[in-house]
Length: 221
Image 1 (cartoon, rainbow, N blue to C red):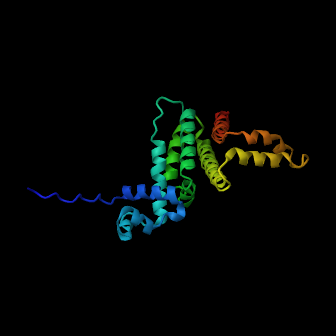
Image 2: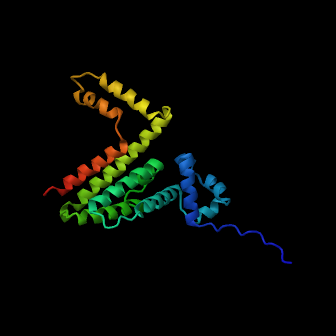
Image 3: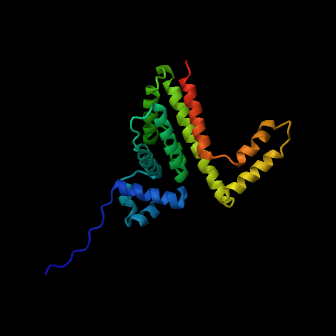
C-alpha cells in the first residue's frame, strides 16, 4: 500500500504576496506591512519575497493596483457615460473607505498603474460625453482629483472618528454645536450649515459633487 505523500505547499507567487499584503495593510495599517511580517504570513523567507517585489513602495503600489482593478471590473451594461463615471467614483469611494491606506499608496505612485487605470476609464467616458479634445484632460483631472481627494479625506475622517470613540452622530453633533456658537459676523456661512452638517450623508454628498462636475462638463465651452 502506497504511503500518503505530504501535501505540497502552495507556490509563492506575486499574486499571493499581494493578497497577503492587502490583508496585513487592512489589519495592521501601513506601518504593519513589513517584509518580516509578510514572510511570517506566507511561511517563507524575506529573500523569496524580494524575488517578486523590489521594495515596500512596489508592494503597496501593487496592492493598490489590485484593488483598483477589482473596483473597475464591475460591468455597467449599456449605461450612459455619466452613469459609468458615477459608478467608478462610488466604487473608489467605497474601496478607499474600506482600505484607507490606498490614499497613501496612490500618493507614492503618481501616474503609475493604479492612476493610469482610473485615468483611462474616466477618459473614455469623458470622450463619450462629447467633451472637446482641448478640455478632456482638464475634465478628467478634475474628476480624478475630486474622487481621490474627497475619498481620502472621508477615510481619514473615519479614522479620526474611531479614535474619538466611533459614535459618528455624537461627533457630528459636537462639531455642529461648535459651529453654531461661532461669531455670526465672522462665520455666517459656517453657522448656517451647522444643522445640515449634523445630519449629512458623506456618500450622498460625494456623489452630489460628482454631479456638479458632470454638469459643468456638459456646459457649452
